[in-house]
Length: 568
Image 1 (tube, rainbow, N blue to C red):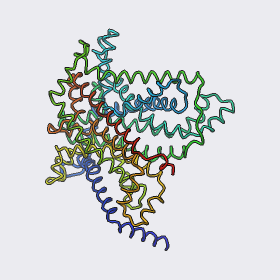
Image 2: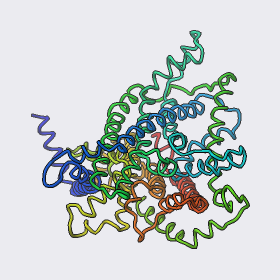
Image 3: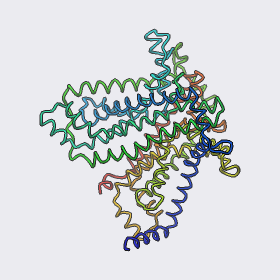
Image 4: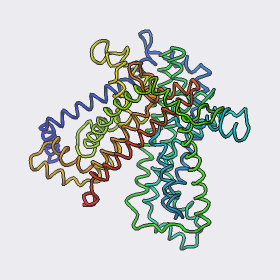
């Protein structure tokens, strides 16, 4: 009886806050319209033709040899990328947390290299691979004299994806290694075990769920990747590129919808395993923080080989990135290596200024909206109790499992010729607003996850005291909660900007001549073989993203939440 009265009182209190109810309604409508509705239209196209439910489209797609080959290729590429990225990420994380690196320079180098791919366009390394190891490559042709080098295909995509995605694994595993109590490992050492035995019998078993988590996240990223297979894939088709070509080349929208459903099913299953099994398994295996600081390993038999391996990987990544500005400065790659600004001049004389202006403006609009929306969702999920909480959390994180190409086709189907035949929703397709919406949806999971982590560290009594003084939900969120998590908000802001301005897979099918995006220009120039122009675009884009990251880091240092507040 008391329990039902308490529930009834909670409901009355909930509905007595109109701002909170309105916020939830707006969020639910947003998630339904811009995440679930486009995916639902793809499902309808796949199963419903000529007025009846049928599997004919799937039968036709599954009978296509090209599709079956692309599916197999995608799985193989995902496995290679996932395994290798996880191992390299573990290497960098282990060296940072366990090994005493001899020089500060190497420490900084490893830190920079592990962050480079995160804040750069997703296909920059593909350009570098072609320019260094292609038929006219600087290394293969100019230095080694190899004229028939073929960097395209599985090996090229795999190398590029591994270098692009291993920082994701590094960041995930770094936190897990930091939380392992050193006393467990030291007790094993005191019993006479070697360092290798300690690693395999203590450290690795504790890390296994986290390794599985990192592998699946990277596998999903690899499977969903469009730009790298498109640039360096050659005749090695993946599902993402096959779906794109099915729309733009074969003009088969229903076939592309069925392929999208297959790809979405694959990524969604992996996402559910990763989020609802491995994440919880990792959290229960490693709980809390280490009891004290770890003594770094100084044994040269361990530090030297691990540092050398990290240095080689770091050197390779640095060379790959250095080649991008040089690719823009050389007069003609493979023929004339004298320096010139002709490609930058050509870029700005053609459509460069418009592409940069459009990309920056759209990203600057999308970034604060994404950061605020992420914090609101995080606040509702962590701090409030209501029936739709699980729905809002799941759907907002669902975009992480939706490949960009699939989302792009869903938006075309939903807003070009979907349910909304007239009115505002029908007029979305071909506008800048639809690009902003895609940017928001694609960046929402990252910001939401960061916000949830930050909010769980705040003592509920701080906000409850504000409620007791008569403040409503909006006032509490803006004056109490948001100031306490402004580090996460600002971090989400810059992450959303970087992800938006470097996005390509979700927007390449939605962009029109009215709005030019830098990433689409890079892809177009690279496909034409104009690598100098593509590198010029990529160089300026990297400068923009790094400048934004540095500015935001400076703002966080000045205005961020103090350590005292967080510790209190």
